Length: 531
Image 1 (cartoon, rainbow, N blue to C red):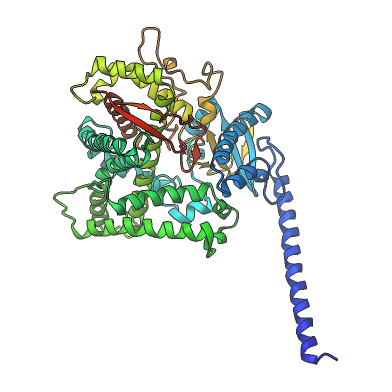
Image 2 (image 1 turned 60 degrees about the vertical axis):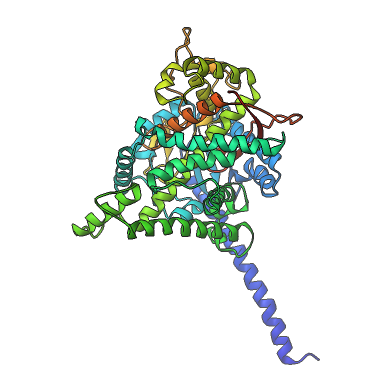
């Protein structure tokens, strides 16, 4: 006979398992009932593929690419990234240029084509300028800053202030040109050194380009530059890259379906928390140093100006002011990451296309030689005299679209759009890829043809449906700075060097890899001085 206590323990254990199973079954049934009830309530939404229970359309064509990426199969995941862009664009042929998808129970409306994207973001800005509460993003940004903060009076006030201050420090002005050229001089010297050391195996351009681009934004917002050998700064840039990659191309994407996963004590979830902590320590230390050394008579950068505005509002008794050190931290993080990632990848894409299309590289260099020569570095004043060079840069931007789905928008209220009902809280994806690959707007849209941006006399053509920086009130605040950096970096490097693939190296794929932006897959080049 078993002791009574043992029987009670077995009975208790069985009941415990039964209770857990009952709870799981109850929750599953409850979720399914709610899911199908919500489907019935979403009347007149744009058409789209039928969602699966629980996972929505995430289980259709997104999960296969997610699985490949999670297992680190880079080549396959980059192919999957491009297939996702083509799939999202091709769905418009089935359901129209405005169609619906579901991630879990979250409704997503995808906008395809220039007219639809422009109509939503430019003609209905009060409705479609908000940002969604995406758990993986919200956990990291607390819905503050410039890029990911919700649309409203606080965002407008913060963005206007930052834009004004950055313009005062040279944003989009010729006066900022020396700061950009200073970093490029270092890049040229380092390229020669690394090229000699590699022995023909090629140089990875990414670290050098990322460093010089990030130093430009550092000069404006932090008032300092970091040497390319600075270990802490190099580590910070690596952390930012890794954090963005984890959020998009790893199992951490599941945080968006269950936010509690962020706190799991292992794997990429633990790594994401470490990345966030290390970036926070670095940026908050810089802000604290600015506060301790602040001289109101001689502001050095955006951080100083922000601290002065914060103190002024405190002195005026504005207790509910949004100008706080906490908000400043998220602004600095936004500007630092966005100002580095997009421009860096645009430069890397352009140089990659120059390697893969040496005839175009030769033609760009011939134009630079004719207009600028070899005795001085290119200047922003040369832009109007280098139409083929400008057209080449624009064609690379058209084909690569470094932010192919823009930063997600959200409907701030229920509205009627193009005959459909868009419920409040719907995530809006503006498919810029579809705009730049639209065969009704571009002849042979998948081919690299810089001359499409030139008229019959060789003058530059600016087309309204060329929108690599987005459109509407959420258009990239650093657009002018990015254009300056991209032009000066590409022209300076092509004036000085000939770029080619290492001997015997197969051409790298043009599919790219997705983080915050669409970046080229890692590649190396051999550098030959032209002088």
